[in-house]
Amino acid sequence: MWSRPAAFGATLLAVVALLGAGCGDSSSEAHDPIGDGSLGVVRVERGDAIQIRTMTRLSGPVSHGLTTYHQASVFAVEDYGTIQGVTVEVTGLDEQCTPEGGQQAARTVIADPAIVGVVGTSCSAAATGASPVLSDAGLTMISPSNSSPALTSDLAGNPNEFYRPGYFRTAQNDLYQGEAVASFLRDAHGAGRVAVIHHGDAYTKGLAEAFRNAFERVGGRVTGFVEVDQDATDLTSVLAEFADGAPDALFLPVTRPLADYAVSQVRASDALGEIILVAADTVLNVPFLELEENEGIFVAGPDLRYGGNANQATGRTADQVMQRFIDETGEPPVRAFWAHSYDAATLLLDAVLAASWLDDGALVIDRAAVRQHLHQVTGFDGLIGTLSCDGFGDCGPAKMTIVQSLGPGNAEASLRNVVYEFSPPQP
Image 1 (cartoon, rainbow, N blue to C red):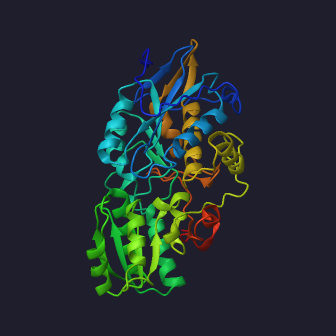
Image 2 (cartoon, rainbow, N blue to C red):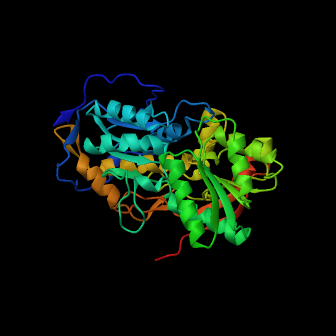
Image 3 (cartoon, one colour):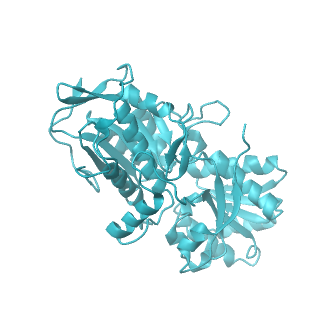
């Protein structure tokens, strides 16, 4: 059996949540542990704490709000309380939004056999590096914001390229987002010709391809489909090429700051200045929506209208968690998937509870049982809505929305300014 080492090396933005007065002590929930020990167990000795990690992007050229997902996980851990009388510690690791960064962070995780699971990554690109490492080590990861179809399935029962056992997410599968954008452009705007820019990574290319396939299915034509380096600043030649195809719209499943450059240069183009601009959920955040040049742009992503939704594991509502952000950080969460992170953390904690039992004062956690529990999740009430996990780890709601930016000073209102809704047909 594995036991916790005496110390764990410090990591970037190490934040510890020691739970003394959370939502309550989960030890009162009697249960029979599940699992077969096939992936090993973690033994938390008396006086030690259960260890989980977050893996998010904590560095980069556009840094504001990058700690949002980690902070939401910390709040969830604190609100959840102890597990069978044992406290939980959560520390943050930087996955750098790259496959190499994800792999490095994952190797840091598996070097400590006391860790039972990971909330992350924030970027799909990082997950392509992290997921194989964590899966092979028998760990579980559950992401709040990975949405690339490549990480789970084609939604028709077939695994995609980067799916690995032990991977789950509360974010949507971008096959839904691609279909939502395609339907929006055809139904709401009658667009027949669209150009697309992507980075070539798991997230942006995966979403671009999902859109292209969906748009062509509804009779549209993609007139340009171009990979642009995410560090590019001059898109003159790409936009000139697009103009030759006379598109009605431009879809931008790209990250900042490239999205900023693309929008401003399109606005300045005589040939493309009046084109319909649609961005993706990577820029569904306050900093992007505050930019003057982005007024009027459409942004796709998950439905953020949480209303009175409450997380069933902690009893906290979305409004209460948002208020805690304001009270403790001085502002509301600026990135869209904060509630997804809160829900992901509580799903992981519920799985640890289901997979654990007390043995002579120590808490024993079956790694295989953590995965088993998550695969059995159905009808879980979260901040983001009802979550149910399929066989490939997709747990999040499929409903998508399109919002339109109202301009500077109105970013929060823009996030609620829904102009189109999409839900996939029920089987």
